[in-house]
Length: 334
Image (cartoon, rainbow, N blue to C red; front, side, top):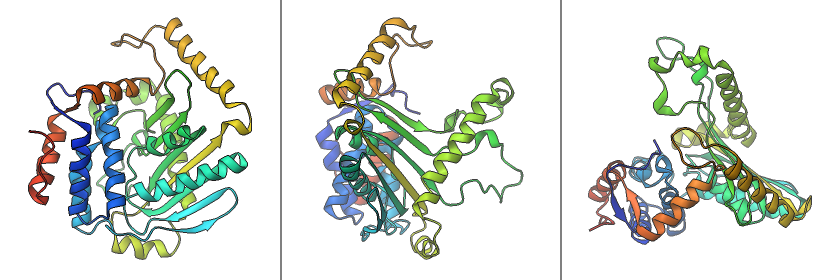
């Protein structure tokens, strides 16, 4: 899904930002939220994370237009302690509530060493890496997951689905580097991506069962930490979800201040040492030319796309055309 497009046009970052912000504005969002979501979606495009970039823009806008999400939520803190804060997203998308939860988590980590932020009654929050990268920028290690209501209840189909394909919530760990890129493990919990499920892959269930058992475990943990821990099953959640059907999700971020346990520079040097040793002493994965840690390729794509323009494939172009025609916003390319 996140392979570079074979056919593409080049779109400049600033034009894509302006286009996405304008579309969200037309869909009813206030300027702060429109600009924030646009920024995060374009960041994904810059990093080559096409699954969570502006290809999702049209769907999000339709969600606001059709009333699945609250375009003007009253985001508020509903619970806080010295180490944790819970934010109520009031039926909107998860981006802005999670940013506020992450900022609160970082503030607490800087004061006490650890901080946790949670958001409930939200829609999709995009790539988990948005929030963990906020942590690394502040000199913290970040961990984030998201989950939706009723994960694990597979009733309703003609037959039971295979537990090996159980869920795929987002999960991300981000660890600061120094001269080397930050280590950012940003993905889903399932061993196979969404486009690799079906009879042609079922033999893997018996060939490498341990991989599937691990992904079942990761899905379970991510779903409970990013869902149940947020309080999105409290009694008031039903009324909110009835009004805003797309807002049955929660999100969690944990920030760990490095300097509270070890000098930050010493830790960053160890991250760099590992990245260099892996690059110099390991053979690359089949089909690749270098051995690198998670996050390095994304940083290279960002540098290339900022220099040459974002490689905008047909999937992205189609979503942009749909939003442009419906909302009356000029496309971000000539």
